[in-house]
Image (tube, rainbow, N blue to C red; front, side, top):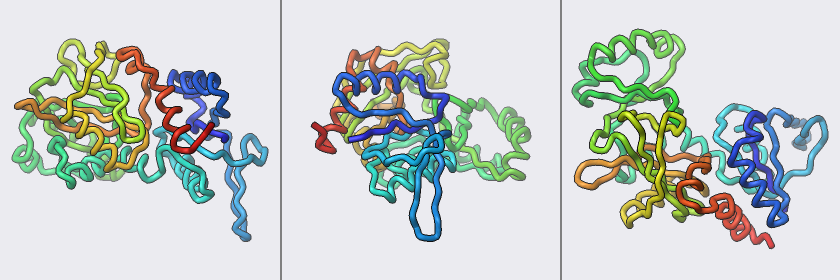
Length: 298
């Protein structure tokens, strides 16, 4: 079987790509990295569709592992591949839902899973309404935030007014959408990342960061530790990944009061460099084990 990793050309040398290619070589799997910039799609009136890579018509793969990119180009490519019955891990619909942090949290909350209280911010909001719903500090995020990018902690009404005034053109004229979210402060210096493959917990790590920084990114001074999930953590992670319908996922849990949890994020395109370092588990091998088992690859 032919397997593609599908991502932007700039990520060709990313750690997770190298690890999957290394493990695939050990198993003699036909795994290839394909950059979306090299792909062209053509359709004609006879409904015949063609996919070209670097101007050459290409035989379609059996399995594709796409990444987070939510551009129109990759969405159209994955849609084409799905319509040609190529197996996608994770599917277009699952990836797009996971990438929309409001809709994914809404899906979880509708199914009674614990998430932070969240407000969808569209246009210039009523600050008095916000303050009735959320206590300061408040977290402000982009709709598709990930890796700790574009997250702001707002400490009081003055800061909120200043930030919203700066963003007024984006919110009103450009019709952009942001999220306002309650700040889970009980253990605000740490969280729990759980990695799942095939709706099974493979590994998890506790992440702690310096100087009480609430943003989740290792490059800002995080430390990571192996963590053995308890039954409650395992059930929450599996239910969250299952509801978003992700074959491969990570679930980030925040620690709430009284030993409870809130699901911060479900991610459809997880990297695993630091997880392998923290746990010693061969995540790349676990992913390929799942693919080989599910699709009966010998």
